[in-house]
Length: 413
Picture 1 (cartoon, rainbow, N blue to C red):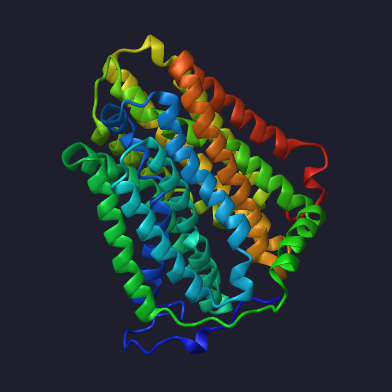
Picture 2: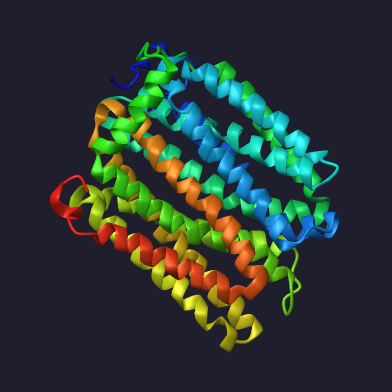
């Protein structure tokens, strides 16, 4: 199965073509689309303190909000990603955007935690539009510039993840958490209209039944050891990454800081600074191999997690400064590791890139969902020290998976 060759269906927008052969506005639209759709599963994290005050829910119950969003995202990738090979990807993207708008509006009017938790799960399902947008960009790009186009769209996706926390923290503190969901729904609705007008149709690349497509993923998982190792190592690191972001707002909300959601969201700026350096891992992976660069990223994350153990011995201001520095470090390590693992996955089997990429993200977001649940549980019982221990253990596990004997026997890994 080859990538969709849909370049000749591009609409004539009249805009000058970029160096990639696609119009710059179209690349920008795809990058923005990836960022805004995936951002929807992260808006809740800085708002957990505000949500707790408004609903009276405890830390463990609040932790289920980001947990279910990430779990819904993982399930959506697993169950719906194969549909992009069998149906018009444009139609799938528009349907998911509509589902996402409905889910976020439902969250905005939720009368209690039960309703909000169901809406959070559906938000995760709809947000998988991002995982259709990235392959769509790869399909539309000419071969010589596919990496550059995908890199641009992935940059938009990463910024959407990180800057979503900044926006939601500020909006929740000044307008309330319900307003954030309304604004997010409006942004995706506008985005859906733009995609409906500008995105071309895609021809299906297979006529296999849905059952056959799902069955083929199990065979691919068994066949490609480098993909298994990449997915498991990324999932382990995602556990610690998510644990920090799911508890940071709760930590800042309590003594001695007593800070609002805007302060928690502001740490997203530090995370964005780290993530913006991550694309260099892609270029270095081409030169030195994905295994080495993924290992380097995991080590950077490990050091950043471990340094947080010194927080109890520091003053209030020094604690905030150190956490900001650690956020830069572990976001750089995590995102750099992800990009390195993607080079491994994309090189394993070009005919099945979509499904292999789905496996990577399913495992990664399963790790994120587990990290949110474990992180908030440990925070409720042992505070920030418990979260730090979990993060260090997750990074060590990721490094161990990459260093497991036999890992370097295949060049792709």
